[in-house]
Length: 275
Ligand code: FE2
Picture 1 (tube, rainbow, N blue to C red):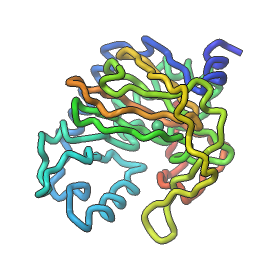
Picture 2 (picture 1 turned 30 degrees about the vertical axis):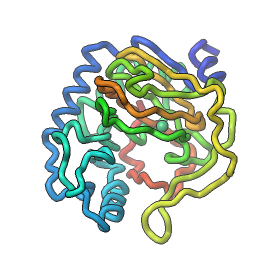
Picture 3 (picture 1 turned 90 degrees about the vertical axis):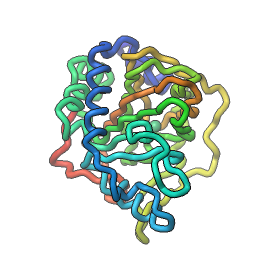
Picture 4 (picture 1 turned 135 degrees about the vertical axis):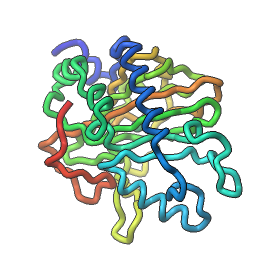
């Protein structure tokens, strides 16, 4: 077994520093800004709309599996539903199919170094099912609660693996990832899925709270890649600093695993491609 695979299996995560060049990171940052500039958010369902907000946000979210969609920070709007800052600085993330729909994101997601790493981890055939561009802007970038990615990309057997790319330095004060080495050796607690009644729900498999003891900050430099086992509990704190912490993430699943139709994210599987 190679060292990368050994470490990944042991810890449930793997940090690869200097994975992408600064120029590759900057190209993705620039492309995200371009996509954002082309987003016409007037009348957008995620804009605050009192009682309608939850339902319309849900529909926009549930339809985003094969699109390029924009999601706001929860504190982005004032009481009258207007953005407090400019559009760019109000966004939480872009998702969930840039890797298939945008040539710049496609190149970054399927780079030569990604093909090498995927092969080293036995994931050469794994399909990229989702991509997310996370802004984590200065001061407004919100918390990501402790979770397991396999909750949101559920397969039987479990096969979800995440690749998280630091496009800027990630530190404790701007909201880096946190995880516990070996934390993946635990049960999957829940499944986030479409509810028969409409909307979404969490199905609980195990009521035991995810363990927070021993969590360490994964502080990494711009250009690093962090690979995450789908069962590894991880989180990130709000960005309280004056610097953004932009990151990009993709998630893969095993094409041979069962992907239930109740999963929130729907894709035409014929259109999915490996790394
Ligand atoms: Fe995650």
